[in-house]
Amino acid sequence: ARQKLGIAAEDKVVLFFGFIRKYKGLDILLEAMNDERIKAAGIKLLVAGEFYEDATFYTDLIHKYGIASSCIMHTDFIPNSEVANYFNAADVVVQPYRTATQSGISQMAYHFEKPMIVTNVGGLPEIVPDGKVGFVTEVNAAAIAEAILRFFSSNTAEQLVEGVKEEKKKYEWHHMSAAIFKA
Image (cartoon, rainbow, N blue to C red; front, side, top):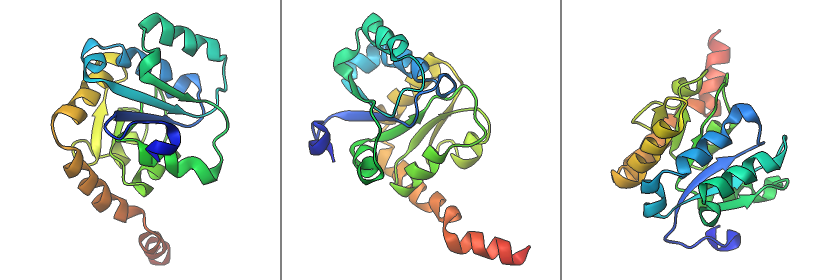
């Protein structure tokens, strides 16, 4: 997957996936990527999704923060046949949402067994148990930057992947059908 996307095998990769809309907080994540510790660690941001707003706002931020070399932008339509490449190329999926009820991106991360960093909004903390499958942060660049740094510096990636594998069992069909028949 990394080879197909032109990403080095040793790179540390954060994924932002899905439609780019204000409420999804890509601008907050870009500000987090401006953290000098993230820059020094060589962490890359892979953005995969279409702009539903003026792209200039985001490209201006990338240039303002001087993070163009750390951002891998794939902002055209991503066909279903290519989705796996983006998740498999990432170490962690970040959802820096300002607001949310829930997110299909979380379920995709579970499918691809990727740890997540989500903000403490809507139902995200309910489906991403903090410290088990990833980290839940407040909705600000500093907190998101801390969570990204914690993920890459604490050597907990393997533990979090195991937590994802265990937690995703809740979302398997047989659990859902059992709940329906029980009702």
